[in-house]
Length: 129
Length: 292
Image (cartoon, rainbow over all chains, first blue to last red):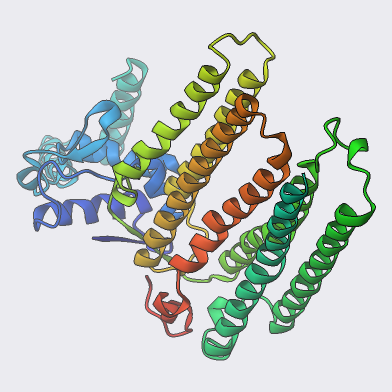
């Protein structure tokens, strides 16, 4: 299979990569246990920074679409097909929508929600969370 | 020994012809064939520089290799009629420095072609305005592109050459001995070959338009060529060790000349033979080519 990255696409390269890998796993082009190219190989082939590909791999691993097996490399996760259908970003948006709706219903203003959100994020970051 | 001298003259003549006439001619013929069959008007992405640049480079390559060929013939005549061999080697035999030094000069224009490819591809990447980049989403492993048997053979020859060298010296070598030096030379050279191989396998895609299939084929040919060169070096080292055991000093120069020819055959010869222009996908260099 081929990966195509458009550097002028508003979607950043790492997101394009994630999307295409998830698509390939979900439609069976990549099966459970299939080996993935190394970060360096893919970054060189796509003329991207190693960090960009590493970020995409990290997020795909977080979503259990792929798994790293140390020095043996990275492979498609055994449950990759079902996990690739899960969109954590969409889930985050959905959760936020529900919570923000509840805050507004309670009469909290948007600047108050913004401030609170920013403070909690900062606190979490300071805690290393 | 007159016969060993005659043998050297034949080997050296073959070295001159092979590396300064046959291969340069073959390379030039290929360059001209590509230029004629895939002209810049139809395949503009293949030529990031004006066409005159390539024609001039071809001409320079032709005259430099012809000059080196004449230099080789001059060296051959000098070795045959003028040189007092006892001034170059204590034993009075023809010194192996002649084919070695000349061989290095012969490799210079061939290496220049190789290096000019890098600047050609760099220019190609600079001229490439495509915003889409593609890559095969497949892990490239050494053993997918080269048979494990060949890798095993190269490793076996590497270890075998060192062991044989130790054996002929009764395993009684001290630091600084020729055997240690040869083992070090072999290890360093093989280390460099491994680095070049890894760079081929995982390194940057030099030609931005090259099709995935062509790239895989090119990498596979390069890796095999590196393995053949490593094997040739091991054989050369083993022969050099045998030289100590059987006192083959009188054919040292012949061995060196054959070694240089072997390296040229296994690197350039093998590559030219394995990659045929008609099998390369040149459509990727058209202006209307889809992304590869």
